[in-house]
Image (cartoon, one colour):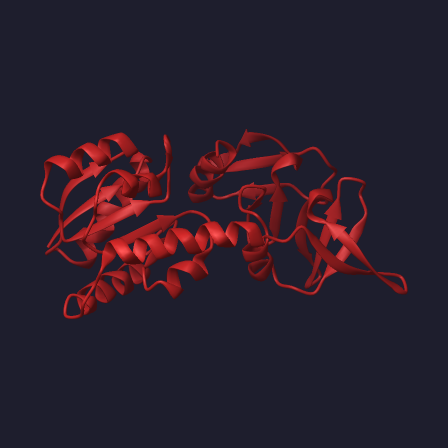
Length: 253
């Protein structure tokens, strides 16, 4: 089985190659491509591989642009750092995805799914087009407001006013730039799907932060980083080494 990896982060591509070797040594990685242009050129000059692992966000734009230039007829497994990134669209369109940081269990699931579809009719181009259409449609459906309790009333809370959302004493609360607190009845996982990933980032299990609230990053021990916000915080937010790559990508979107 021959595969191609499209990934602009060297560390991430090396980690994926190692996982592929550990998961299925019959998979041969033919090439690792880092940009849209390199990918288009490669597919124009090489036979289509059996499988493609493709990062959604590349340094020179969305990898979906590749499909505008070349026809990829083999199955594609997308990789993304954004749990909020319209993942339902992938499931609906029968296209697999892997959330970064990728683990071996999820990779095994994706590879097994690929092997299963080998025996069934598969139109990659049609599925990709449906996926892109679903995501574009979903981009218009992100929440602009939440209805939240305030004393004896229910009031609209604009997502533009939210600096961060966190879990505090098992309660989910949104804190505004004006330092007002509102309680939400959704989990952080549920909120992650409803918020625009270009504007909000899941920094940890306890925090979702707004782009406008992020001031800068401070180097921390063990390759980690601390987030500095423009608003007062009850504690320092430390992101893991694996998340450092994701937040850098998010900050340059």
